[in-house]
Length: 549
Picture 1 (cartoon, rainbow, N blue to C red):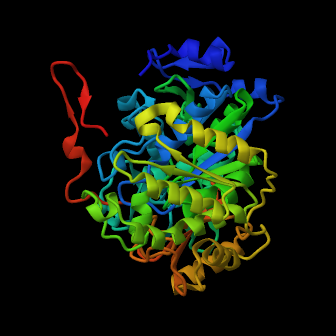
Picture 2 (cartoon, rainbow, N blue to C red; picture 1 turned 180 degrees about the horizontal axis):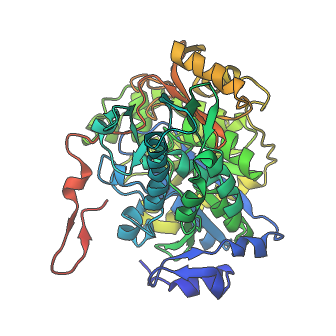
């Protein structure tokens, strides 16, 4: 690892003024939103999305690839910034551990990033829970708005996995629930707001429930949105850090890809695109989740248009989809997935084929990054690289950034440069004017391969209510498993003939989208039998945090 640049030197090299960066220690800082105003007329760089196939529980190296690709582009002489979400404490102490990359391809300092960084997630949780407290306090003091306690839809949040908080009873007797902070509407608003004014307006538009005479209740009516905005003022500023090779990295917001929209903030990307020739951004999980939401939700809100998309695939995930063996969360992968297994690999390629088709459905050129682990057979890596092009990718490359840093991603960087010269004709998958049910059905059929959608009675009623309240033009945020193209984590490969069950529709009026919850998906995850947090400790002699991976 190279010696880290001081935050002032990193910012100056990127083209930021001294007064536009607020230092948080020596090697990290926050970027003032005034910088975006100053740079607004600059031409935009090329916008590259990194997504993936459906992963194993251990992940496929998407963050490692995103960081490595940015470093590889820099090594080839192209001014590049990587934009990422902030890790959540839930996975850090749960199954996956840290999420700042790894090996020779990471954003640093790792301990700061994976724990509190600059406190943005805590600000989101405080703002969200303040509104929850205001709602119950209003009812306690006479309920002048005549809020119906049984129709309050605003939950509480916490930034850790805790399955016992999925349903709780308050002292008042009202039943409510907790969702993880990264799945909260306030986190979505932070990621999608274009500036402080937009943030404030979106907070005021939050729908918290209905009155006894069937009228919607907004956060503005509870006179809470202003205080929420005050809590989020600093969190609205993107965080500037660097990779292990000194490439600038902007981390901001942290919505999950399976139960939220799964992308970093619009402000982070808008800044980066005016400061760099190429911007690499990552969407959560596969093209069926974070990428679909990037194209249908984030690009709709930002007006920004991608030049290319990278799909990360690994031999072990492809073998999993080819029936090569089980993969249990929190447990090591079996040798049938990590060792030679050409038969399972060949069968599993159908999963990659669908993800390539998904990216192409939005009019964006696709590049496949075959993320190689140390024991992967070379002939199998070459086989996947060749088959990816046959399946519709414009290029494919074997990538080794974990072991080799930016040098291990130079071949991938060259492939991405080639893809960026291809014509891109991005367009969303559905029109704003389509009905809510039609939008969900389009995603289910074209992205997942479903034969149709079934709506539980509660979801059907919620869809009708959303349209009656004027929210029918909103895009859809699907909440479903990340392990399958379908709603069922056991349906591997490229399943067909299934019906997607939608049990609930949530209105996120401030964020500007509707969340469709599929099957048994939960918005508050639980911890595994052996949480990753068991390995985390503090060395009392040095003060160093150990065990974060």
